[in-house]
Length: 454
Image 1 (spheres, rainbow, N blue to C red):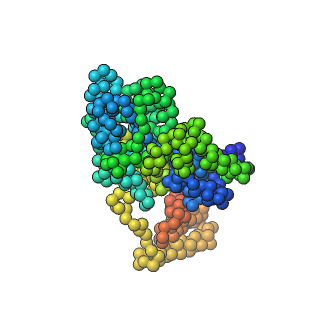
Image 2 (cartoon, helix red, strand yellow):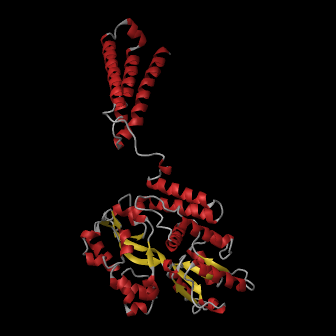
């Protein structure tokens, strides 16, 4: 995209990419009627608004879902899937105690624990389900360091290190590895995306033995948080066919096309009125999807820094889950690295508000006065040297040597103009350059003098 190629008209974007690449896409608000995009779920659509511009539209959605072995729950006396994490832990430990007697490879819970974007998705669901916040607030401050979030992270750590319902190997699972464990019949619970249902339905063992439910919460009223995934479509502003590309985008993201895709491919629609369509509900779990609480990753808030923020968070949290870091270390590292990526890192407010010398202050007036005297003296000295450049003493010293030394000093005096007053991008950029160049000019006088001697 940075090369601004015109060969491509439409791009398919992960839900967190519009904020990263939005500048490369046309604003659809002026090209579409509001009714064409407002029918998408608002929490899904908001990822497509970047700086007030509508840079993409949802193609299809994804949600975090809990898959469970209803046959095994019934076998051990449980009549419903878990609504809370306590329920899940009780059911998992009970079933594990029986099943591992004949199947040592059986495990309680698999999900996306590897250090990658999938862990961030799981983390957002844990935070929602524990009342632990949304990871980043509107001031771009990481909110991970709170009692609810810490308690939930300790709980997840305990699944491997205390309750043994998640194996250490599972901490390196992505979607595919978790699904493979599930398809082998070796997991009681799995967190995954809706596509896993169509794969599960191909298994003679599992087709009629599993169910899908909302993810648990610390309490039942906090259950059902589902991180939004899926893909969106945007029209490149470098395309020579913008008008036609927008028409194609309209068609691909329309209610009619989404209806056909969910019926024939199982792809989750983002037009939420489709969850009351009888034909759609005959082929997908409308009751489940319609009951989910949409959880969004903070890509809009973090903007172009989101990918770096997510990397900082999932790397630190994975290090904690695998016992490479303590919880304190992981939270501190995730907070610092994510806020550094967003440019908001200020440990304990230690840096305070930006400070500078105001032009009207006594210090500025004193410094400016001294500088003007020095600059004036340098100019007078330069003029004296120029007028008397044929004098034998100046010739012996070298007029060029003298001129370069005076010029270097003049430039160094001028740095005061970049240090006094409200800092701007220009003055901050000039500060090191003026100092370096003035030093280089002065040093060139010595080089010139040495060359003259030798």
